[in-house]
Image (cartoon, rainbow, N blue to C red):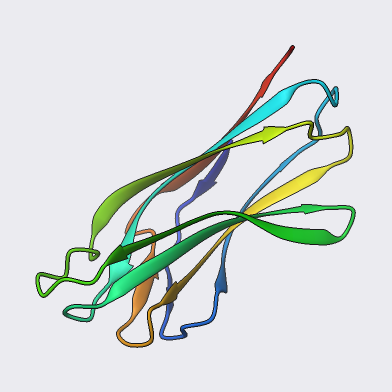
Length: 127
C-alpha cells in the first residue's frame, strides 16, 4: 500500500509524474497482481478534461498499463471528483515492479492529482 498526501498540478498536455509510486516484488510468475489507484483529481478549466495514467517499470523498461480521460463538458465534470482505476497484471515475473501514476490536461486548464489523500494498493493473488 502506498499513501500520497500531497497534491500535484500541471498545465502540460504531456504525461507528468505525480510522485505517487508503489513497489512490489511478486513471489511467482504464475500469480496475478491487482493494482488499485484511488484519487481525487481533475482539470480546473471549464469544458476541459483530465488524463490519468498508470505505468509499470520492470528491469528499467517502463510501460503504460491503464489510461482514463474524464471531462469535456461545460460543467467542469472532471474537476474535484474521486476516481478509482484498477488493472490486473498477469504473469508478473518475480522481479521488482514499480507502479506509478501520471496525469495531464487535454491541452488547456490545470490538471490536479490528489485533493487530499490518495492510495495505491497491490494485491498478489496466488494461483
